[in-house]
Image (cartoon, rainbow, N blue to C red):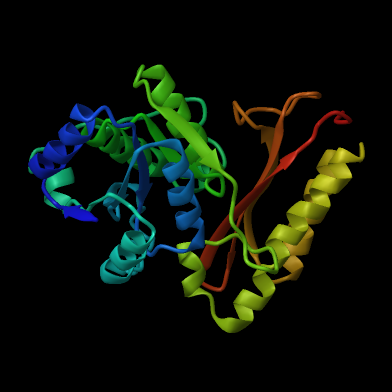
Length: 282
């Protein structure tokens, strides 16, 4: 696996892939890799001839009171994991390469950014869209793979790539979970043992609400029950909402739905989501 930290070296490597007529897949990450990230890598290997993984802890998507300085950084372990998985190139840019002195551009995606995590974390999705647009321009992949766990992020990136005619196939990969159902996340490492045991209430509450809605039950009552279940487990709930899976707007009967939640247990904020069949909705 080739590891590069400077843009000129990255462009030289990508140019060689293109000269050989090879298809390129990008997996953007912030490191602290786990089985969820490796599922993205495996999907990328199936989709392209060459797999590029980026690791960059993006300061622009962290709020002033969030965990940027504490976010886990495991460069050596991550690099070893990616090399063993058959990744071709690891893109490890320093902050000064991504955001050189005088950097002044902000990318904002309206319509899918303002609600849910956008409301709870103002500016977060501008930071996501800005860094992903830079990664797309740097690597110029044919396809890019993102986990469905960050479902709103996936919607933001898809809208941006479409609106800006980037010509990149943005692919969502199903959420990877522990045996008890908790979605894999780099932030799970923050959980104290007792909080980890209680955290399983998050996927269970979403699952129960989804079953009620799919059976034609009252959606608002199901959402309220999910919030109550999370509170009873010790969570401070940011939101539990049912939305249209494409627009993230109001759900409609016979369209794909998505149930999304964010809640904090102890000092750790967790997010999760599941698909919901809305054939009996309303």
